[in-house]
Image (cartoon, rainbow, N blue to C red; front, top):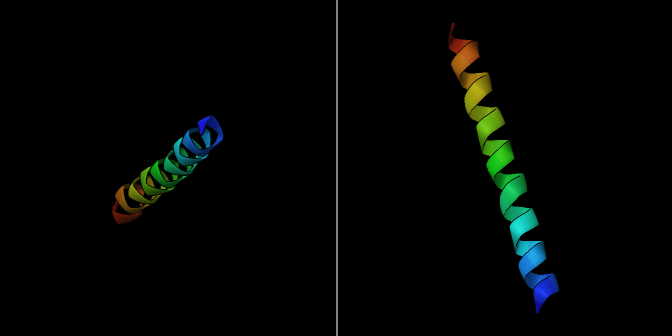
Length: 31
């Protein structure tokens, strides 16, 4: 059970980091 939670947290962190990087690239790309 804890492994599943750890896996979900890891995936969520990866997706969040990817979205943040995409937003940063778009923000600086427009300038």
